[in-house]
View 1 (cartoon, rainbow, N blue to C red):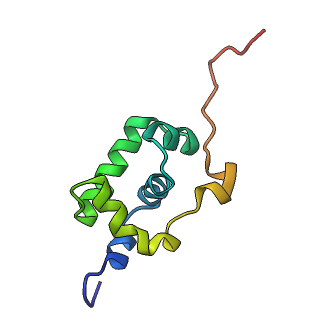
View 2: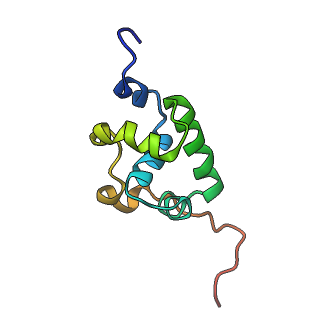
Length: 98
């Protein structure tokens, strides 16, 4: 990566999953709701959120949102992309309703 380190360049360092989590935060969703939309646990959301904050140098959620707000077009639009982002929960070995 050459040139000055800008917030846009830092956002490019985030993984797709970290960008998805940040996009959910931008929508005002809770960790639990983001997890439901992405098909992951809220604890996994917390881990991705913490990693994104560390990579972007944001000490608080407010700082993270302030940093990424001008670049929100570079984040996935989970609401518009719909259910294809939601990964199904494996049901093998689970008994369904009889």
